[in-house]
Image 1 (tube, helix red, strand yellow):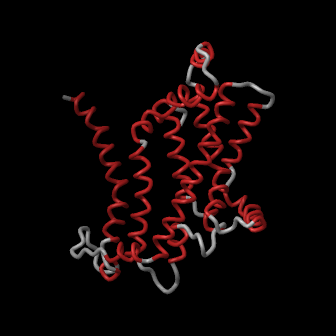
Image 2 (image 1 turned 120 degrees about the vertical axis):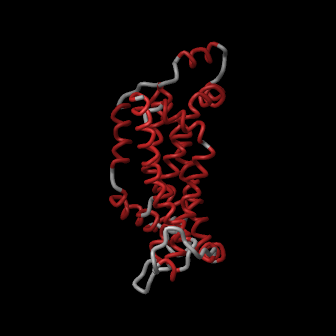
Image 3 (image 1 turned 45 degrees about the vertical axis):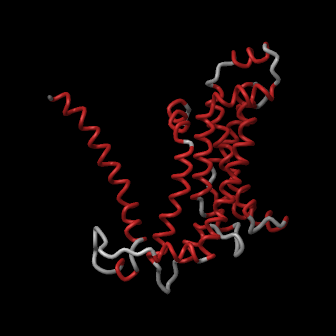
Length: 271
């Protein structure tokens, strides 16, 4: 009986921790379904009066739904660029040895260690000079400075775990590098690609400093619109809560689509 109780204890601790993590999301959902008067009124664990007016404001206001579109555009663009660039780079680090390879690999990681504020001024001046300022491509390329090194580091760990005998067998069978890489090698690291997509998407989706500095009135992302909504004149708590709740959905969708490979990737990779 004592052994069974010890086995149940970690389970209850896990349930309690999950409940603790879900509490802010629940509170955000209750605020999104209430009016401002009810939010600032008496405390209610379960709201007595619910409304969808806050979500209707976001769906019907072009400032809000265009901000969601801008965010998704540069986040998806950044993820595609990062994974496309990182795959051949990680393969080179995994399969070949060349002069300075370890130093170059470490240098990539040092870019990831630097705070985004360090690169604000260079990016702002460069993009203003070449006409990329206030475009989704500007934010996507700026985020690549941080997501590409992370993607290379993750993928290199997965690729190093694939036996080199697979490369030798492909050469013996007469397969070229392109056929081997896309048809034989990449399916073996699907979990690593899923983990890479997850981290690239999440970094770009929640990053605020570069997105706020490199965008203006034309391509303001959702995180910028939410922060600029806060002013001394007051807060529309319900609309902000509804927007915050909707920003969780893209991340949930990414995890849902890559959930199987993601779990395998976390279990086998270096992350």
